[in-house]
Length: 395
Image (cartoon, rainbow, N blue to C red; front, top):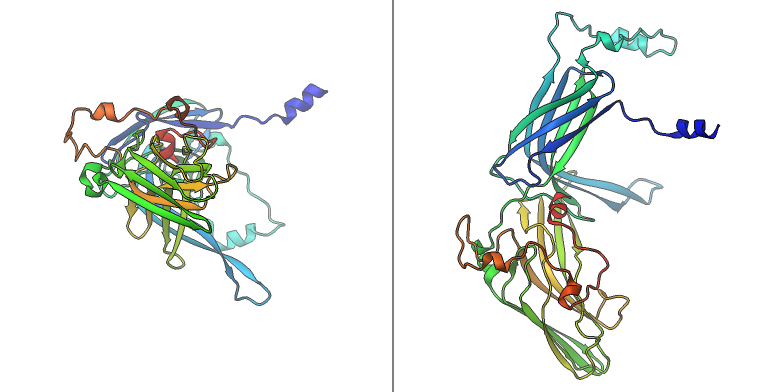
């Protein structure tokens, strides 16, 4: 009896299943996207056509709570959105053979009659009499050419009001109705050569002060350059002058990703959000009162997408942020914060464009992945692990 109840509660496998397999994991603008569609049909899939579509767009969507103008209603939610399509291509994988059978279109009278509760429903044709793909396993090859111009890096960040997504959509339709569909997201990365940005090679020095009743605290960040790629070490140093009467116990260094999303409907509105990556803390236990402490930055750029801007739609940039505090339980809520704008790219400042490498030590300078912070003598102040580059660009 128990075994029968367990078997009845188990979810039955779907009659149609499939997946999309791509040759590469990451694509660049202008690449040719080749792949296969694998179908597993346990029964006949009744459809007129089986298509696969390449689609890419930037979409903005967010809601705001506004004061309502309706009587008796205090607030209302208003949705803002915008979508810019970068690529939309479709390819037919299978088409039902043409027949001489005419499709009878129902008249207005027929629709009104069938809408009555007392009407007699006509008998539906059996699946064997309909066009479609018989049960079994099938493989279909497809190929698309990704446009080279007006493409942007895939982007999907936690809490952001906008995203950039590319995907392959498999659809089986019958009389305009979707009988089966499957979607496969994949990342697109637009190369960003930091060597072509003069500001990325510039050094930077930011100093901030915080006055207390008894003393002053001064912090300074010095960077040799402002352009980096994922996995690269941030070269520079931090100086903390503690002129107050209390010790400084935390110095949280991390990257903050800023996203500005612009809507077009129902009106133009800007939504700004930020996301903080993992970071590193103070190398020593504390900076005592009256002490000046200087230490090199031992922070590796995590897997984040490059800076980009879609005109009148979306903008993503980064700041290297240092926060000083006295409470180890709230490391990002200190009394002094320094921000340094930085640039993230796919190729370091040593490369000015395709095939234009300057020094020979490029490959030794940029590691394949950042090392664990505990192996470098510094402790991470966050419990979250760094995502992989494919996860960062894939959303």
